Image 1: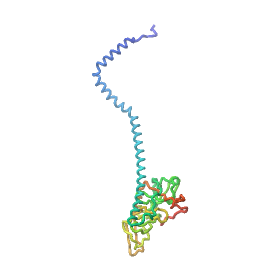
Image 2: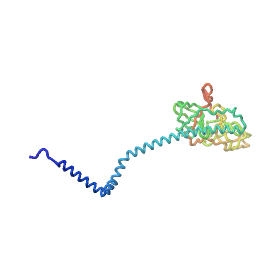
Image 3: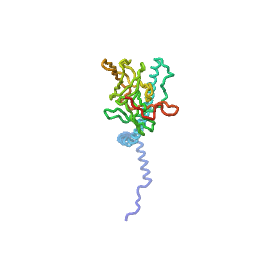
Image 4: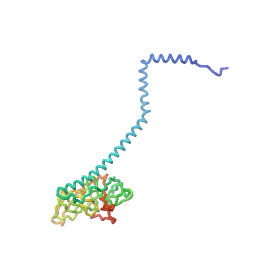
Length: 288
């Protein structure tokens, strides 16, 4: 009959074997170095694989943080660019008035109007309509008839407003009209859209009118819709045909209507009553 409890190697023998093995390893340490290097080379890919999830997570977090930071900085720079461009447009107006020795203290231009940057969400897909949809609506204080400009000039005006979005009719639309004046001699005209993005028309211009190719058109302030002094277009063609009553005048809009992404919504200066000076209760008819 086999015993229930079988005795193995004694503890003393085990300790002796361990001591002997340690001494052998210590003596053979230098000779085992190539073996350790080989094992390390074999196990290196496994170490990389084990560290890959953590490395990918760190890289993703860093990339996401960097991208978010760049997007925020890009939006902030775009907002500052629009604000500075709008100021430069007004300063250009003041400079031209100063060159003509106009009294700046009596100028109707106001520099402290409220402004807001908006982003274009949608562009008109209809071939005969020129409008864009912005990501700002009545919740942001946008109102019908509000002037809209970009970094170069007048874009158009708000024609429809919902809670979170608004529609802007571009100056190139055939239904849009805008009172303008020549900065060179203060001749007042009306600029109408032609249905072509890079072209507007000045109608009913007398042949005796002093207008030349290259003249700058700015908002005149008439109609109480657009504040005075914002660049609109530059004259590109003047034809005075003896057989016609009026001259044919075309101009190129200064705003980048074919690649709009960010625009600036302009609020007129507030009167003492706290209501916009150019906003009226009755709808403002678009000049034709």
